[in-house]
Length: 106
Image (tube, rainbow, N blue to C red):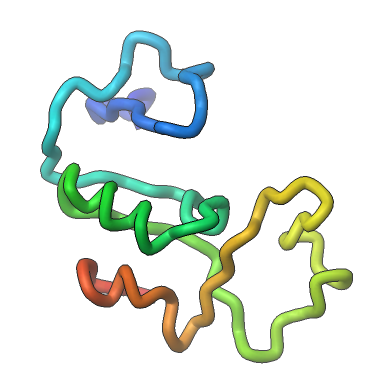
């Protein structure tokens, strides 16, 4: 987003800053916080959402799964061997934490 002229800052309490040097979080509150493809990587998304919401209004993107989603062995997205995508959200009810704190747009 910085490449497009937006003054985005980096924050990730689980990973070292490898790609956004000198753009670390500088404030305790923001007008908007973005979480692109984040929540499927969290073991406790409800807790993490509450922590992120303290920083400001949040825009979330994630992959929503239908009731008839493929078995874990039949869909590359799950990535069970590496633990990459460990939380999955149904289209009908993405996550209780988002509904309490967020406007959900699908």
